Length: 242
Image 1 (cartoon, helix red, strand yellow):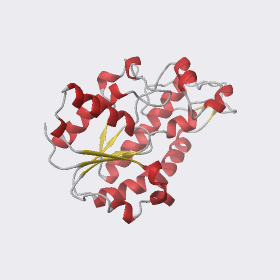
Image 2: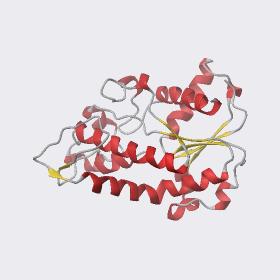
Image 3: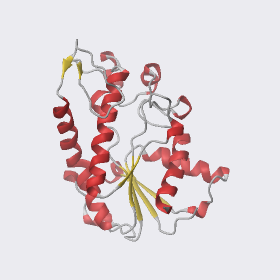
Image 4: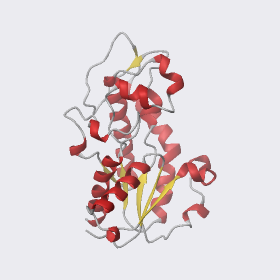
C-alpha cells in the first residue's frame, strides 16, 4: 500500500498517537517507511495563524497544495464539557447514542440545546478552518474521529493533567460521558459530510462491546496510546488508497 501524494496531518494533541503509531509501525515493519510521507502540525504551536477560528493564508502556503489532508481537529470538546462533574449535575437524552437512559435526579438539558451548543462551538473552530484547508489542498480530505472513551475513573484520576484542579467535583458518570462523546461524534460527522470530508470512525478492534477504548490502548485520561495510533495509521492508508 503506497500513497503517492504527501499527507499533511493537522490537529491538536490527538495527533501524537498517530505520529507515534506510524513510527512504531515502520520500526516493526508493518508498513514500509516509503508507504507515505507524513508531516504533522499541532495548531497549538502555530496559534497566531488560527486566530478567530480561521486559517491564515501564510500558514497554508507552507505546504504543498498537492497533498492529502488528514484532520485531527477539535477532539476534546466532549471532555471539556463533561469529563468532570459540573457543579450543577446535569443529564440529557441523546439521539444516536448507545446510551438511552437518563438520571432524572439531575438537571435535564434539552437535547436540541446541547446539539446547538456543540455545533455553534465547533462552527467557530474547527469547522471554518477545515473548510479553508479543504479548499487549499487538492488531495483527499479525511477526518479522524476522537478516540473512544476510557471507562476507568481510576485511570482518569491518575493520569489527568488538564482537569486535575477540578477533580474534587468527581468524574462524570460513564453514561453521561458516552452521550457527550456520541453527540460530539454525530455533530462532527454531520459537518464532515457537509464540508466534504470522509469521516473515519474508531476502529472496531480497539473498542469493547459498549464502545469504550480497550485498556491496552489507554494513553492518559483523554488520549489514546501509540498502539491505537498504529491502527489509525492503517485506517488512513486505506482511506487514502481507495
